[in-house]
Amino acid sequence: MAATRHPEVRSRASLERSVIEEFDSTNQLDAVLGLPHQLTHALVRVDRAELTPIAAPGGVIVAGMGGSAAGARLAVAALGQRLTAPLVVSDGYRLPGWAGPNTLVFASSYSGNTEETLAAYDEAAERGAPRIAATTGGGLAERAGADGVPVIALPTGFQPRATIGYALVAALEAAAIAGAAPSVRHDIIAAAVLAADLVEEWGPESPDDSLAKSIARAVHGTIPVFAGAELAGAAAYRWKCQFNENAALPAFASILPEADHNEVVGWDAARALGRFSYVSLEDPRAHERNALRAELTADIARAGADPVLRVPARGHSAMERLVSLVLLGDLVSLYAAVLREADPVDIPAIDGLKAALAAR
Image (cartoon, rainbow, N blue to C red; front, side, top):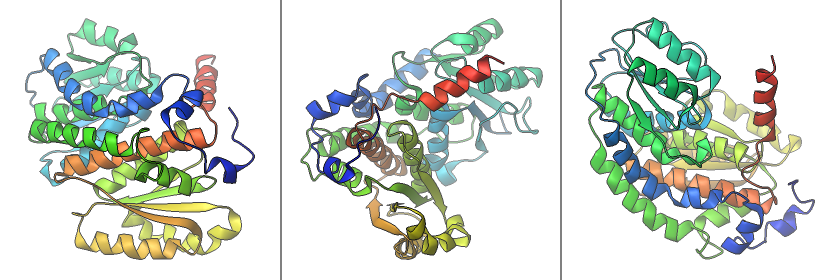
């Protein structure tokens, strides 16, 4: 559904569940609210796959695209300096040149038919790399079954981007199985407990001035730029992608401190070009210099962005703080869709592109 012509009116609209349901035709809201369950249920799904340790001194390559790769990007941030070997996302048709027998390739495709991921899986087989897969079926499940490759079976009925809890846990477990990082199961369970509390605080039954609803209203009618350092940088990219798909809006992610070496120069000209907002996602336990950069960069962004918001992560462990930002962003993106009177399931550009590719 097209955006309203009166953003100033929609910005004051109710964000109660009954209003959300008018536009959320496939109940994407409950998928987001189900993040606490996803985190714990994902561990059950991993256990059912009966994975065994894999010698992979070269690290782990996650072959995936879009929502199927999102969990791995977050896993890298959650693990941080606990990683003892590389954990990287390969979002394309080809694997890095160093992939081989000493590298675990984790093929992640919710549908099982993502063409880039299938190509990467086939290349991993040619290179003799050990593999595991996470999928609901499709060509990936068929290949893995024929090759005797373990499969983490994902639940059906979701949009790929809405299975972030499963994707995150699967990537974390792949890293542990390969010896690239320690097991963080206790952190996952603790993060699920925190997420359940935050669902109550930020969900559709929350007050109209709750944090998630307030952010959605504040950035309504703007092109948002989400920024963050370290784990908050990974969360910023998730926010960007969720605004792209759920709210069907242009949105951008900036990673600190790199953005301070180039992107900040553009804020002086931004106001003359359009309406921008700047949302600084911040981890209270980030490097002290990154904490200072977040403050100073937000000040610079005020030259061209309105509003400028600073949003701290919640929780004790890195996993908790990351999950808090992910849940908040997912909710904000859904509320943003409702304010535009848009159905968050609609992704016509992606669907059309896939159809055009399949026809050639």
